[in-house]
Image (cartoon, rainbow, N blue to C red; front, side):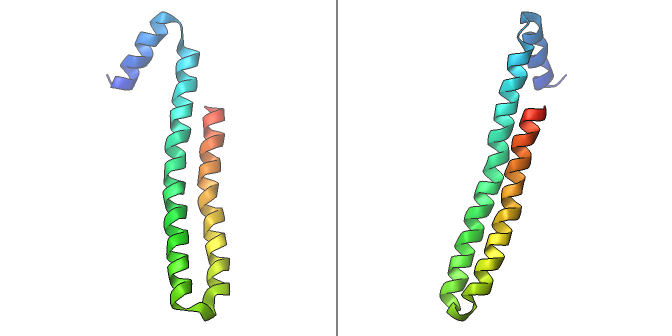
Length: 86
């Protein structure tokens, strides 16, 4: 039996399972926000570095950067929605 299952069984005996699962959802959202946060940081840092190296390409790099940010931020929004659903 896994540790998570043991924790759920112990809390089920106390009758506080709903609050426990809400807590797991909050932890899940926190974990889901870490990945996109790191990804956006790396993406913007590399885009700034490439714009400094080739200023003539800054418009195209900026457009690509914003598209990458949008796709990466979608992961965080999926994490929020999954937290509310489960």
